[in-house]
Length: 103
Image: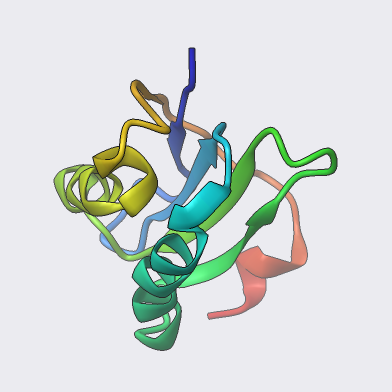
């Protein structure tokens, strides 16, 4: 079963989120990449990419409410086409790292 984990880094309106996807790439890859590139262009997707081996991907998002993250996940072509049939949402508290000072 596939899973996505969403985690909140900052408990403020400037929250950063982490989504972990497990899926097969297949013919939906270009649509999947274009879907998330829109958020990268808007500076809301800070990082994204597949793990090695590519059984999952990690997306780090900033400045989004949980409902909006969920909406973007539901619109991802991988989810729409059943390649990510389920996901899980969890909190994540980051306490160290240079990205904390990036603002």
